Image (tube, rainbow, N blue to C red):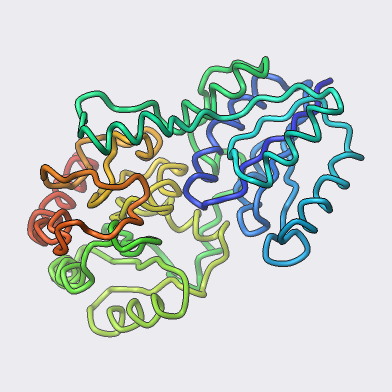
Length: 345
C-alpha cells in the first residue's frame, strides 16, 4: 500500500481545482492512501471525497507560520510513513518538505507551473494556443509519480446527503430561478467595477422569477453586499450565514453563478453549475478556467494589451482598466438570460 502526501496549500481557487484530480486518482487506486496537505479552512473540500482520502490541515497564520512552522510540519510528516509526495504547489513550504522527503528516499514529483509559457503568452498575446490547464498540470504530477488515472469526477456532493433543510438560514424552498453573484476577487484587475455590477443586479432584480444570492468574504465586501441586498428585491447576502459545506450545497441549487476569475467559479464547477465568468486583466487561455465549464460563457473584450497578468495583480498599463470598463452591464445580463434559457429548454 502506497501512502501519498499531496501538497496544495493555497489559494482557494487553485485548491478547489485539485478536487477532481485527487478524487479520480484515489478512485483508481483504492488500495492506496492519499493525504492532502492544505489550509485548515479548505479542508472541507476533501473530507467527504472518499474513504482513502484524508486531510492534513495547516494553520499557516499560527503554529505553521514561518520557518519554525515549516520544521513543525516536517517533524509531523516524518512520522506518518509516506512513500510518495505529489507537490502540486512548488512554494517554499512544499520545497522544504520535498527536499526532506527526497533525502529520506521517498519518491517525489512536482508540478510544472509553466511559468515560461505564461510569461510568453502575456508578452506575445498568443491566445489561439491555450496553455495546459492547471487541472491537467495536477494530473501530470500523479502520472510522473506512478498514479495515472482517468478523470471520473462529476460532483463533490456525490457522496453527501443533499439536505435542503441545511439552507434554512437562507431559504425555506426554491422558487423560480436562482442566480449566484460573486463580484469580488483578490486583485483589482479581476474585479468588474462595483457600480457596474450593481446595475447588473438592479436589472436582474426586475425579473420576479429570479432570486439573487450574493457571495463574498471580509468586512468590506460584506458592507457592499449588505447594501445591495437591502436595496434590491429578492437579493440575499449569504455572508456569515453558511459554512463552506453549506455554501457548496447552496451553490448546487443555483441555476447559474456569475463570477470573476476567482474561487467561486471553481466552487460552482465542483457542483456542476454553469458559470458566466467575467475576465479582465487575465485570460482563460492561461489555464485557470473552471472545470468542464463552457468557454462560450467567458465574458471578455478583445484588447491588444490583454492579458497583461497571470493573476491580475499588476497595475493597469493604460490606467483605465478598459478590459473591464468596456464590458457592458447589458451584455452580462443578456448572457445570463441566454444561459438560463438554454438550461431550461
